[in-house]
Image (cartoon, rainbow, N blue to C red; front, side):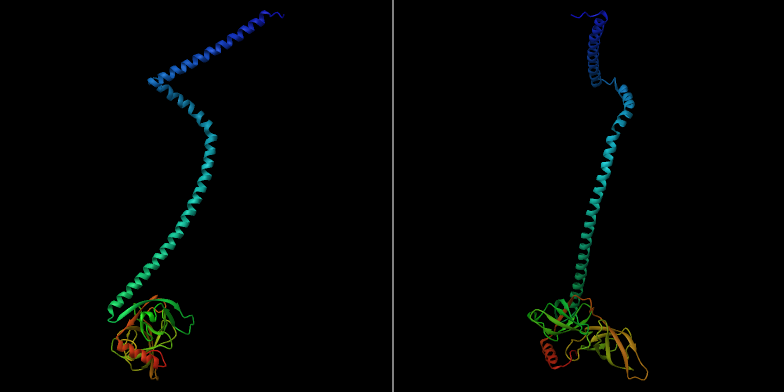
Length: 302
């Protein structure tokens, strides 16, 4: 059996005493903490000390939290960029949708204005009218013709005058049950008797094959006509009723030594832009004469 020396015995005793002292210290600190918690909760005695302690510990807390804050900042940067990209994409899609919607509204507004113009023109006419919509255009550049969505089922007849909100468009030359073909006044095969509003000078306006150009035939070199004169349908030939706007004179060229002047006019009607037209129904007596005259005449027009 081993014999312990006095030195070893003292070391063992010191070890047990040190452990006991640590236990008492921990117990004392715990009790002191409970006392501080109680005092802080029930009184304001420790407010100053707590503030001072906060000032001392704040740099330590901030430094300890710096890596975590940096990681969150980097994550926020990337997430913000993705969010911005998503928002930009969404806004671009919404912008395209709104542009399409705006264009559609503009088209509807323009069509509404055209229809209002037609209704205003119809109110000024003493004849019955029918609104028709253009559904086709003759692709042949030599023929100035359009197709409308009204036909025999709507009582449309060959030779019927056609207007838009500004003036004479042409006349019906072919009728099917549900559509009709219109020969425009700008076609070379079309002519219409007109008179000058200013002095009632009677002339013949013939198409030139160009959409916005009419030619006045056989204008005497001594005729009283000038640029700006308004041309109206004269009613001669019983094809077009009297008084419909046809065009405005925009060129008068009196050539010395020639019996006739070169006179050109611009149609009132928007021949290349109108999407709706008015079909004019006159008295039955005039219609019968127009139909008979059209069937017997080899040339379309007045």
